[in-house]
Image (cartoon, rainbow, N blue to C red; front, side, top):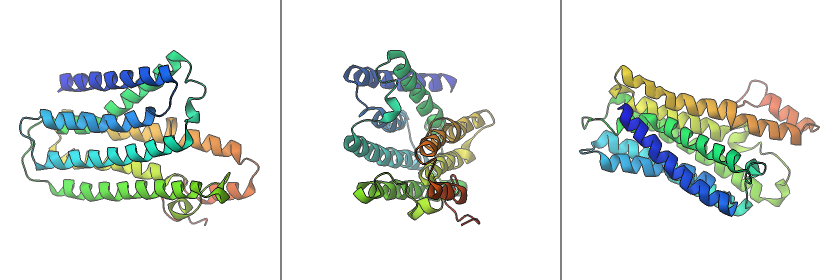
Length: 258
């Protein structure tokens, strides 16, 4: 199994390096997020087609990853086409090693998050879907719906010229400052829950996947960057400070302070 994990990491890394070279040469941001989401689809499809006899639980899991990847790819690609560039890369886009470092971290992230899927699509599985997996399936669909709705609400909000320079505090964003990230985290925890009935003692290490994406979102590249950005932009705005102090960070549930 370890050899399979290492082989898949190599494939993921090569995909990222290939598109990194294009992105660096043409100084474009249009491939970065698109490559991230498409790599999940490519690797999952490769694993599924490489399996000698995939069963229904494995096909269903693959479909879940496909749904997640396709949704994200379409959303991120149309977004970058509209805004033209991603300001996250303004300071590193022209620096070969810093830009390479980002793409390398992206490769590691894809691999780590996909660990449960890689494992599940590498072993023989009986054709029946476990009750826990069925529950996980519905949790995943709920999470994907939350993430999709949150992204859509923010996209529509930003399209309105009257909202330029404002922050969204309607819809799911009324209850959470980052409801899309809540959906994202829940998606990958539900994937792990889906495969949990099939785990052995040693394969429990695949829990690294949902833990990794949770840490990345909450403490590294997701929430901290946006919170810092908004804190600087609205530092003198009392309405934003009130919104921040009365709205949950992640979970889209009413706050007792509201």
